[in-house]
Image (cartoon, rainbow, N blue to C red; front, side):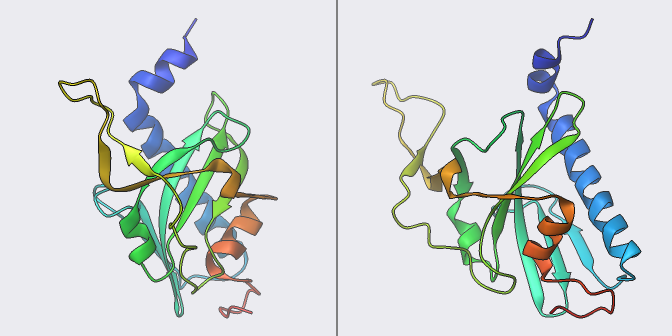
Length: 174
């Protein structure tokens, strides 16, 4: 029998890719069924600027940091402060089961087209490694985001609405 806990840890990069591809496919399928085909979804080659995806529809351009876990709600985790410099940055947390099926979507951000809520007041993230003195120094340009700041969403449709605005099937946000 496969030890899923070990597999989640040892194949975390593959797990992230599967979840990212699945989310993009699910969003495209939802938009397709609404008659919307003019949304751009771009993937970052690496997570050097705080986001994994860019989703654009009309004047709304979202830089999205994806996080995932097998927790029923988001825990605390680090994000790059550069995400807040984007026009409409946000964080999406996917609560997934062992088979990588999404159980719930959680959202941290503002309305479509609006800047991300201020990251002031969040404590600096710490580096994983310790110095020779045993101290974990601050991780430059990163903060520790609290899971309590996330809003639980009622499914993929509500996630797409939070990201892009209300879709009415006619290619316009409302």
